[in-house]
Structure formats: C-alpha cells, structure tokens
Picture 1 (spheres, protein in one colour):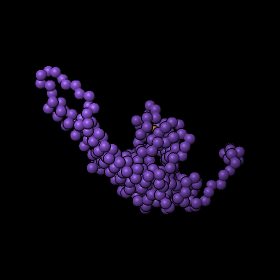
Picture 2: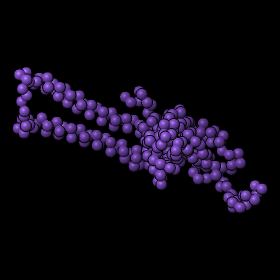
Picture 3: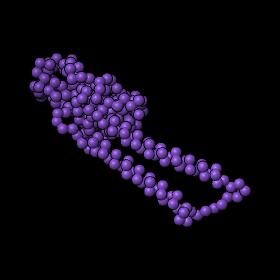
Picture 4: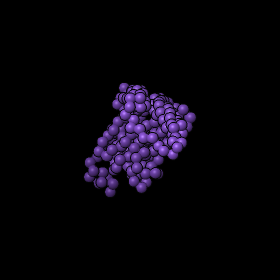
Length: 245
Ligand SMILES: [Cu+2]
C-alpha cells in the first residue's frame, strides 16, 4: 500500500511498511468504531425534554462498555508488539554476516559526507573515496554503515529503505541495509539540526556491481589506481614541509 507512494527498495522496507499498515488498520478500526458509537449514542439518547440524565457508570452492565473494548484493544496491542519487535530485532539489532561492505556516514551542519572503500574493499586505507552528499552503493549487497555526527544530533534517513537512524556526537552507530533495485534516491536529515537542516539533502546512487567498479576506478586517485591495496607511505610532517619548499 505504502509503496504506491514511495518505492520500497531495501530488503526490510516491506516489513516496516507491514508494521505501519498493521498499526494503521488496528487503530483506524477502533477510531472509526468509537466515533460511530460516540456520535450514535449522542444522537440516539439525546435528551428530548431538555434535561440530561447523569449516570455514574458504576453498574456492572455499564462497566462492560469500558472493560470489554479495553480487553479487545489490549489483544490488538499484542499483535502490534509481536509484529514490531520481530522487525525491530531484524533491522536494528542484527547485523548481516560476511560478505558485506562497509561505508562511513558522517553528519555535520549541514551536509552528509561519505567514506567508501576503494578497490581493496576496506575502509581507512589509502584508496578510500570520500564524497559529499553522494553515497554510492551496489544493489543486492549487504552494507553495514558506521554513522557518526561531527557536531550536533542528526538523523540519517533514506526514505526508500524505510531507514532512519540518529547520529549522535561521540558515538559510532552501526546499522545495515541491502538495496533491492538500482536508481538515485533521496537521503535526508530527519532531526532538526540547526538553521540549514532543511537543505541537508543528499543522494544515494544504487548501481550494479560493474557500474560501481567503474565508479571506483574513475574516482580512485591516479597514483593509487595501479596498486590500490598498498598503504600510503606516511612521511613525517617535517619532511613533507621540507619537500614542499
Ligand atoms: Cu542534520
């Protein structure tokens, strides 16, 4: 139902839509029923003489009007709790097994920056590819993201994945997603983070393995393209400064 308005493009998007639909249907049913009973009774039992009759509601036959619906609502709650916890454990408390790829997502006022592994598939090596406001991933590949915030609270939101995760300064929060189709879609910040919050939009580019390999080759610095796995030789700062003179 929801995917008619917004594509569902992660492996768990359908499950999250299912929970939202379940909650909407159950609460919607009670909302409509309560209103029908409420306005029906107002109309049916309105005081024609102009005098209202006061009842305490303590009699057994009156209390039933509260107790029975209350118990039925609690039964509905059990369905919601079961459905929601099952999805929560899968989406938020479980990380995929190997093989998976890792990306780093950095929120700051007011942009998203991303660190992609280069051809070696590892983060924090010389061939990492850094971008601002453009995240590049491969379809059908599980990804673990490492989410950090540089300054204030942000929220990494990818609507087509049904993914939302707070980014908290001082913490590295891990989560996962697997995209099920290719295309370019929105990334948002879903936590008011200052005056530029509204312009903190970015894009996620979901491509095939071959397209992603081509993107990596295009964006790997020329001096690393031939030997991507070799770590850079780190010169002491003083030596670098001298060489620059
Ligand atoms: Cu933000």
